[in-house]
Length: 292
Image (tube, rainbow, N blue to C red; front, side, top):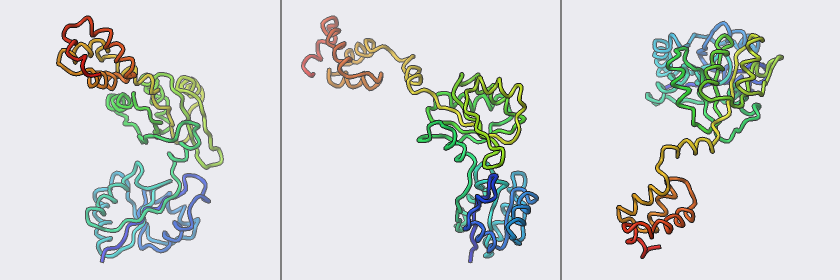
């Protein structure tokens, strides 16, 4: 009989944030797969958990993933933990879940602390729609392509960044997005927790003279929907051009008005009034007068 995989969220700073359910589960499994065994053993020692620990991280995920899968097939109960937060978010935990799903091995998620969710709700930026983008690549070309693909995304955007790469990332963001609102969250739930609610320009100026310390979560305002709309219609034909085109194709007035209004996101009444003004000028459009 197959065992079971448990994804256990661990504290992102304050040790009191670990759940009672997670503590109970970590004490009862046969093996704990940890991103960094040195970090995890300190946590386990603090809570008196004496369960065998094995490493499972980005650079051994293929070999160790197959090893853990075989253990699960043999009935072992295994917990996966990361250095901090929810395993499976920007770490190889997702690969192990995929392997388990393929082999129909049960997976149970024990929710708990998550850095990007914590930063988002404390950012002061819209939380209704957001996109978690994780870490940006160090490759300049790929990083800029990634950022440019998000230029018209109206959702709040969330990134992780290391202190030594922060300024480069902020400058690249400013180049692509302009001066948007930004919240930088660091040392979350720890003694020196900080939320810097600012904009990209001021953030760059600040960190040019104040070296960044700690891991950062960047919460960036999404694109202005009005500006995105203007960009989307900038290359479209004018309402008059579309009316002439559809009328020449024999489209009737009601359908023509709806099509032009939907394409340009303009009120149908305005399009119909423009159509009426053009109707007398164009013999081609005279065919449409019977259907209003």
